[in-house]
Amino acid sequence: MIYSVRVFQIVFNEISAAELSSLDTLEQIDLIEEFKVGKDDLDHLSGERFGKIERDGRVLYRYRAKDYRFYFEVKEDAVIVHRVLHKGTFSDFLFRSKMPLAEDEALARSKHFWKLIDEGRNARRL
Image (cartoon, rainbow, N blue to C red; front, side, top):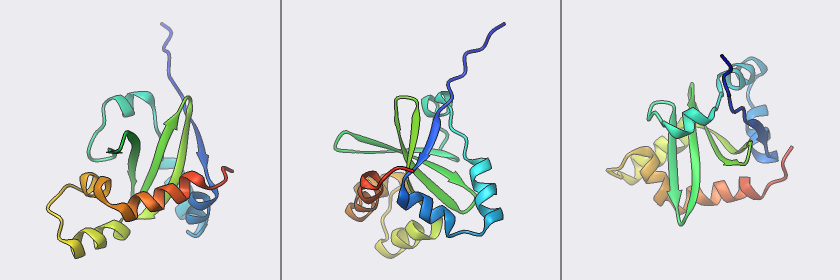
């Protein structure tokens, strides 16, 4: 029996690569090892690991790995990672703003979040 598995190439831009490289080496290895994305994952999002954030026709995915969040988009057969952020970055934001929304929904409405993503989207890919 032959199985067709769609594998994505993972591409980090300069900003997401810098965010990842600011961590100690072992933590980087653990996060990269844990960050696995397949077509089936994106077709059947689990709120625990994966999330989907949409705004103005733009689709962004979130992957939770330990205390970090990878924010990425999919283009053809590549996963483009725009940001790698510690969960406290947005947890603090949600707490301060007292938004009664789920994390992904609150991020979709946040202009600050999309500014961070646009910085990553416009950064050079490595």
